[in-house]
Amino acid sequence: MSQPTIHAELNSEEWKLIQELRALPESPLRTRVHQTFTELLFFFRNPKCQGIGIEGFPCGEPSSSCEDCHHIWNALDRVAERAQKTETV
Image (cartoon, rainbow, N blue to C red; front, side, top):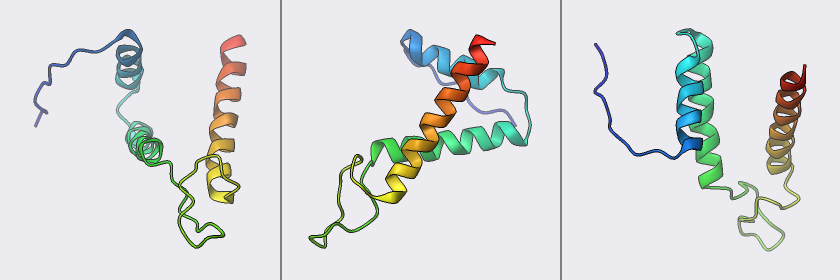
């Protein structure tokens, strides 16, 4: 069963992202990429650390010293570095 077509106005960056997603072959990898994007977008919309700051409140700062936040940002940096290396080869 096919999904309904959605008509939307996109800027060039948004359209490029859609094209890149569509270029992925149907596979478990494509499913995983879609799932990961959904999870990343949730994180970007809600960048609050899930940890508790020294005052006892959630820190709310993505640049805090929370190990989980830094782990995610470091992983994104490594992915970006690897993509840049691949593009230059």
